[in-house]
Every structure is written in structure tokens, then in C-alpha cells.
Length: 134
Image (cartoon, rainbow, N blue to C red):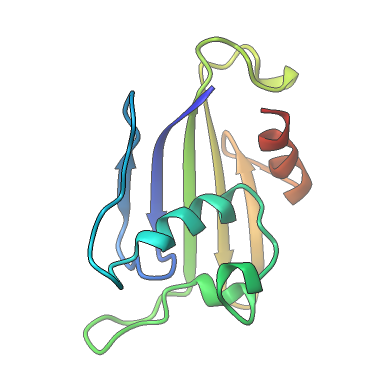
């Protein structure tokens, strides 16, 4: 299994929907200080089930939601989605017959976060175990 695509919306410095394609070979992230490179890695960790706000460089988990700038309004929702290629049928047993798996995490202000695998809501532990089993 391998990551194919990462979609980020409203997460930390990504106010608009941003799509990262992860092609064969080595994928690198380069840019000047403060452009959001570390936020990309944090979005992966968050979607994979990270529950420590401190390790996400925040005081509470809602700190991952885009807080706005002088030019852009704050958001109420942050969402990160990871597409995983499963053409070799190596995933957890319940996903062995699926060629592509999508894992998504969404957080809304004052409502907490939810996890989804292939658009079906699952427990946080289910999403964590999905990646742990890989």
C-alpha cells in the first residue's frame, strides 16, 4: 500500500482546498520558512489519528482549524483526506478487495472530530488501527 493523494482544507495554514499528488519515487516538500511545510506533515499525522494537541503545536485540537488572517476569514471546519493505493490487496482484511481506500478526518468548532474510511464513519481507534496494521 502507498499514499497516492493528500487533500487539505481549512487545516492550519491551508485555508483553501489544496491537493498534493504523491507520485512514484521520492516526493519532497521545499519552500521558505513559514510557508507551511511542517503543516503538511502534521496534516498526515492528524488524519492518521494523532490525538495530542501539544504534538500538533497547539493548546487544543481545534487549533488545527484555520484561524484567519488580515485578508482571509477564519474557518469553522478543517478536513484532511488521504487516498491510499491498495491494488496489491495488502490492507486490513475488511478492505482487501478495495483498490483504493480513502481515510478522512474532519473537525468542526465545538463539535469535535470524526473519522471516515471510504465515506463510512468509523471510530478514531479504527482509523489508527488501519494505519498501524500497514
